[in-house]
Image (cartoon, rainbow, N blue to C red):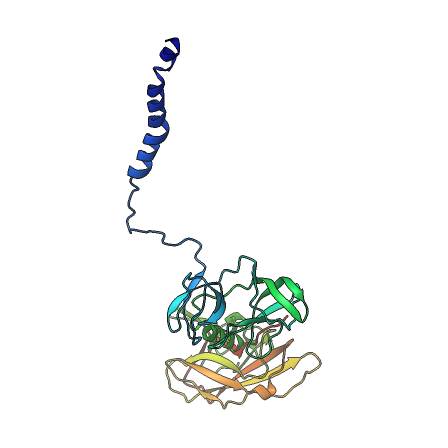
Length: 345
């Protein structure tokens, strides 16, 4: 009778236990609703490392078979395989080590060497091989092998990382390489760096002595006044290390006239200088350019046959042509353009 009294509360204790540790947690798990986000974002797959390909082998590809399809290398991850002509998934995960007996037994697999895969066809599955012979592609680094050289039974390897959705990527990269290799660049020439032909600095415009002036409280220019006594200007720039001396170099001058009363031109001479190669002749090929009142970009071309590689300098002489007895000439700015080359060191 005493024993019965000790156990008469047992069913109550079991019920309390079930409520505390089973019913309440389950209810919370099942019925707690997550808040919706504004754009209904849902993560469908996490750490997805499979791509969808079409089987064009001419036969069904079975689960676990390594294939090279649609530009991707991996093993068939669909449990039912991929029927010929059908689409299915292959695993291209590179963050792993895998082993396969899908090998060419007569080859020799060396740990640390590259592993290659020769794609199969309608008659047989592809095989792992030890070289890039034929149409074999590099797919990973060998980390282990079974059997012996010339009698291999399996190979273990770490797959290489693969590009995903690389449509047109190679073409775009090639275009970028071409642009980088042939990019047009500029050597800027500050207006204050332009001097008289012999290097004497220019001063502020004074009477007929060419010099710096401001037009209508706006543009700062070098002014060659009517009946100018200084008609030849010059500047020197260093040759950049990335200058491609197999391409032309051009000198650009933005120049204009005041009243458009005189027929005036601007001529340009360019003298290259390099280490061990000085006192060269003028390499500028363009005839004197006509100056117009509105202001235009005058372009003078130096043929590649005279351009010297860096290190070096280019000395530029600008000479006013014609009789400026009724017109002032304004030099707004100057710069040099060149083609750059890809630097290897």
